[in-house]
Image 1 (cartoon, rainbow, N blue to C red):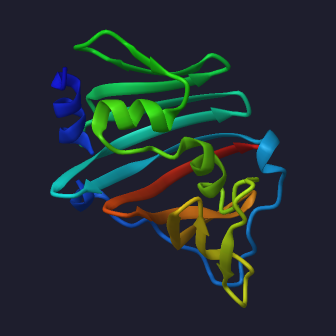
Image 2: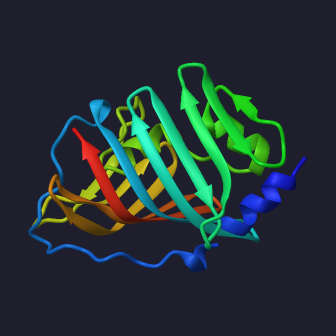
Length: 194
């Protein structure tokens, strides 16, 4: 049952997430409608949940109604793919039959024992609060207006570094914390279609 989970554990330890170059503080945040944006990013992810730590590479293709997230080992070998569409979320690995659930949170909770907050993360990764009934508490850099800290849906998110892109400043290094779960995301490459 946990064969693919063990493989995913090999790809996902906070130590493998290095920082990406940042931008000057005066660079303004990117401006676009987050609910209609399409993006593609390449980066690294580290997850610490209790005593368990995992790290690896990720590639994320996002559109308003779909997501495809590939998880790879630190050496680039594909380990798992998470696909979201109008029918729910599916996790595909090379070892086990695909698993399906209504949400990414439900699927990762059942498979890994922790929640991947995809519904909020698709907005947070862009440096924006999610349009959620739970109002977000936000802190911004006084000079640039960029988000530095966001608290929403029980998650505490710190934006540690931004990348200077043709669309404005986009997050390059984020720390997300929810109880004993810590996720570190480092983005190396952004492609955006606002």
